[in-house]
Length: 132
View 1 (cartoon, rainbow, N blue to C red):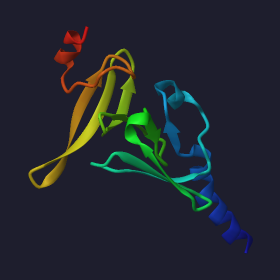
View 2 (view 1 turned 60 degrees about the vertical axis):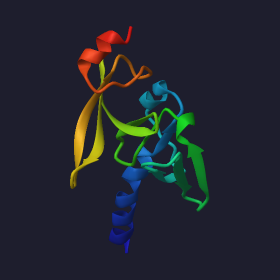
View 3 (view 1 turned 90 degrees about the vertical axis):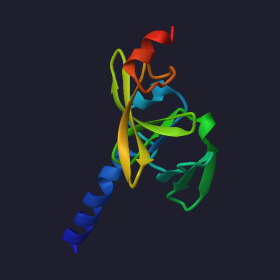
View 4 (view 1 turned 90 degrees about the horizontal axis):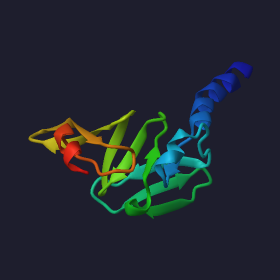
């Protein structure tokens, strides 16, 4: 009985420690702790909302335009820009992102770039020089 309880606890504990989060500003992605009340974040691919389900069973819909991004269960940071979801890869001098697009019969991953976490996202590094 003790081993079953321990196994269940070890399965649940990592998801509680990481925690999913809704990010309203880019500097919130650097916080160490997450919101342990959120069970699941479901962004609509082509819709206007991000759906949030809490552990107590309540649900909430937020406009994508009111959010900067979110952090999923694995700790991956996503930025929402013009209702598209971009996975944040690097945040050095130039922000580097990846996004998926359906082309032909399969999903493809494409790179994207920005000058900082709050600036406009473009699909080529050459376009970054023209942003000023």
